[in-house]
Length: 169
Image (tube, rainbow, N blue to C red; front, side, top):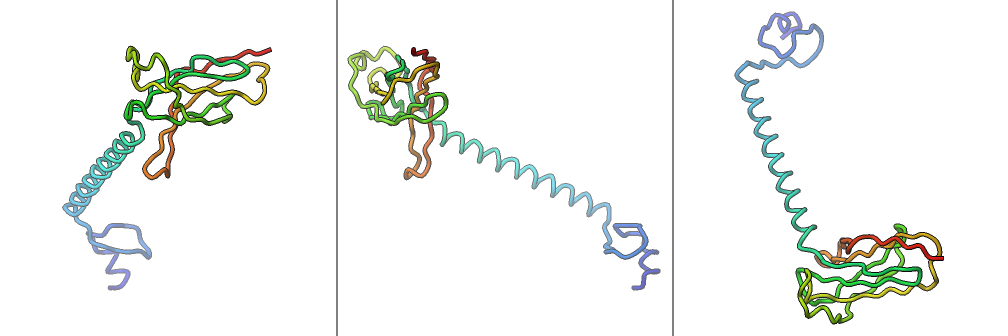
């Protein structure tokens, strides 16, 4: 087909003169393509939503209960309980002004652990951090419980209690 014959054809995608692909594309075919694209978008949205829900469920499970009870310029102490595995020791990490300082395992038996009055009461394990040097000045202390993912490949942190502000002179 020569260029003149192609320009005379009325059921082409483009009406612009010149070189280009000329493909017949009827209104019925356009409507079918629009429906297929809409179905594909709906399936994509469903897949992404299901993936996000799965990721949230795996990442944010029951978690931990706990509290940072005391912090000063010499150390910090508190308790933590694993709500999924009550009574199990829990790895905790201490951060000072957003910087990692130390890690320990909360495995100290607490006298109030048997009371069961608070969340994680029976599963409470105490932790104590002692700083190698006094932290003079103003500091914010935070403690996080560590949850190891499948096979230990991924680790997530959950803050325990509220941050404690420390002014040590």
